[in-house]
Length: 174
Image (cartoon, rainbow, N blue to C red; front, top):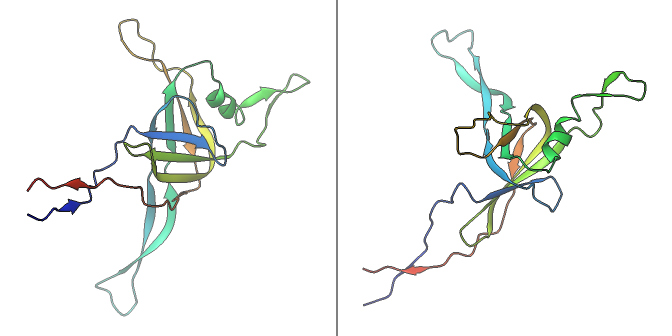
C-alpha cells in the first residue's frame, strides 16, 4: 500500500495574536481583543444618456472602519498615554491645550499558528485614539477582569507578505 502524504491546512485560531506599535519590537502587553478590520468602498452608479434602462457601477471612495483594542487593566499606562496625546492637557500657564504632536502611530497585528510561527501580519497606518475607556463596568457580583479599550481611527491597512510557514505533513490512515 502506497503511503500518502497530505498537507494539513487548518484555519488559524483567533486567540493567537499580538499587537505592537509600528516599527517597534515589543508587543503591547495584555491585548485580549482586536475588532474592526473592515474596509468598505462606495458604489458610484453611472448611466449613459442613451441607455436609460441600465447603469454601470464603479468603485468610489474607500473607507476603513475604526479598530478597537481591548486589554486587561494593569499598571501599564500605554493606552492612557496615547489617548492623552489627543485629549486636552494643562499648559504652563494653567490653560487647556491639545498637543497633536506624535498622536498618530502605526500598529502591527501579528497572528501565529499552533507552532508559534507568525503566519499573518497586518500593518495599520496613521492610527489615533478617538475613544478611550479606562475601565469596563465594575460589578461586585461578576467574576471578570477589568478591561480598558481604545478605538483607533486609521487610514488603511495592508497585509505583509510572509514566507509560507513550515507545515507538518501527516499520514492519511486510509
